[in-house]
Image (cartoon, rainbow, N blue to C red; front, top):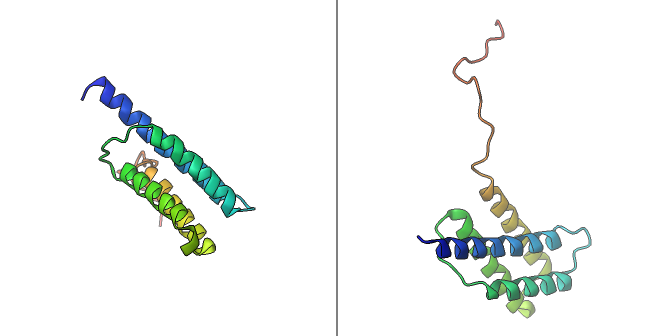
Length: 120
């Protein structure tokens, strides 16, 4: 893989994450307004389309792409959707995405082999 491929990959992943961040901040707003969310998502999709898509291999990045597709399908089918149900579903998917992103981060037990003896 040459440098240009890596640059394109990083650029695409950053664009996907920027889109996710924009959607999540709108979804988690206390005064959720679906019209505002749609405007934000359309703006994010417009900037995302400027970046060339790249083949992604990791689970997290594939889930990111699926989330973008889910949001774009929700925006396209505005007449056919239940706003409250869509809001819950998009928020749940975003939370699952963040969970997947940080799945590998954990605090390692330093002295696991020694165990803990409290005297009982």
